[in-house]
Length: 273
Image (cartoon, rainbow, N blue to C red; front, top):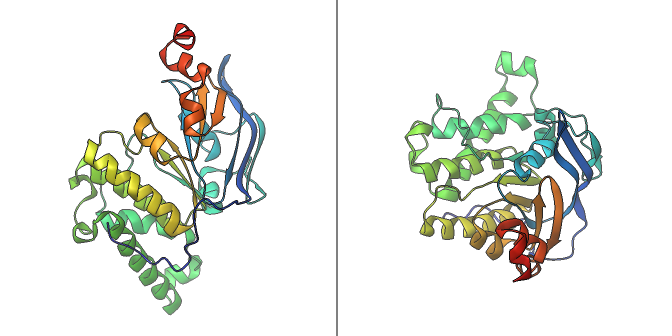
């Protein structure tokens, strides 16, 4: 993994004010309660996990946070800005970027163009400059391309930047999704099962990369993951969902020993063993 500039790097795990404040959000589909009363306070530079059994509502929470779904209750604040009611692209522009459980790269584009397209979200030049190809527009396009190429170095993808995105291995496609999310210059990065489909060595490298990304880009990370070894290794705090409701929140040690969490994963009788 190639280092990028760390000029703005600060020491991790320092006491930080809340960056993402989520207060009692929820949604129902018909009569089905998908998420109910979900709350979390993610601090600046926090690295938190969101876990739960299959169907617990984890991805639905991500969809609520990113404007894919609109919450039917509660509030969402990013840096004190209310995000409720914003559309998905507006949430990205505000500072929340995500990856997906199912990879969603642009199959018709090469590796570099996939990243550059995300960088366009923060382009400053307007439509007139774009159409007229002004000098300022050309400079900004060059800067977006430079940054995209630099970001690919996080996972050693620079040498493959002109290859079709779909030619990458499954693991590298997952890495490319993370790079593309970073190109949007987020304050908060949401990772939806980043270790899915990776082998043991790739998971170890991913854990290092996630820490490196948090420290280098000075952002907060919330991740959904079924690999408990990865979650317990890198997450400072963990929130557990079951049937759309938060049943526990705490440190990895507290979560591992919480009877409600054990029951949710292993069955009610396991909590009494």
